Length: 213
Length: 213
Image (cartoon, each protein chain N blue to C red):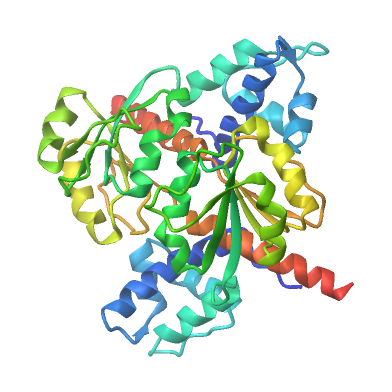
């Protein structure tokens, strides 16, 4: 099995953004150098990453923009609709329900669930909010494999165990809690405080560099 | 200048979460092995990372939980309040204004700004939403160095240029656009579609492994 390295995989959505932007301006072909310039990367990097999706550019012509967009989406699985549930309809959960970027990538949040019965849909999102009791029926009915976890950290493991029991295969964990899952389930942590820490330290390092001058 | 490697830096907020959780249960000292178990990491990794913050554990006793929390927060700069502005009060921007995790890390979103005058504060967040015209005055008054960018991709570069002109030093870019800044400004991209891509591909690879069995 030829697995794509994580840094290459993380760059694919960035390429997709750039390619879609070029496409919207009517560009049909694009060189690795053009993409590289846009993203402040090296052209060789672009070529290597693109090769994982099975697409090779033509010398002196470049890549066919439409074909490359399709290949990247196929590779990630974004040409198929992925139904998902969201657990925890607090402020972060509600924002994710409304986030337009997911629809573009064919992630369809079928329903949200919350312990608090008063957290109904607020009209700004078309996603219904149900009590937790309805979770098993919805997961079964829509054959859902993906769950987005936006519950408070103290509830994260209990909800995770429930999701695993219902056959969920992939958990996108936005709670700050560390969760344990069996080997047949994948977890992806998303923690905003990571990004904030990097930004704070880089700002601080920049200040130090300045002061030394 | 001894810079901390990015993967180590990104782990610090995770350590902080674990340590704060232990502290809330009344634990005073903790070993690298305890932390490692909680996070599915190796103890040697924990010790190396912690050394960047200047804290070394005592053999057979471990780390003082309170001192370690303080050292990590000091290292990242989270014991000082960082005032910030947020540009673009759409659904993602509003969610970030309400996100309680930022207050815990002393990030204080002083005000949000939006082109659309109708996007006022909705009462669920204490952060005021002002028209863009007030941005220069607020940045100057509060000596703001950090900006959170949640505008549509097409507006990202124009707003960035304006922020740089006002003296903003760190931009946390949640728009999917790539932005260009001068060398004295740091940028951190935050793109949810990256995490989604990783989750989708890992789920797919898991399915393939299963089918081959």
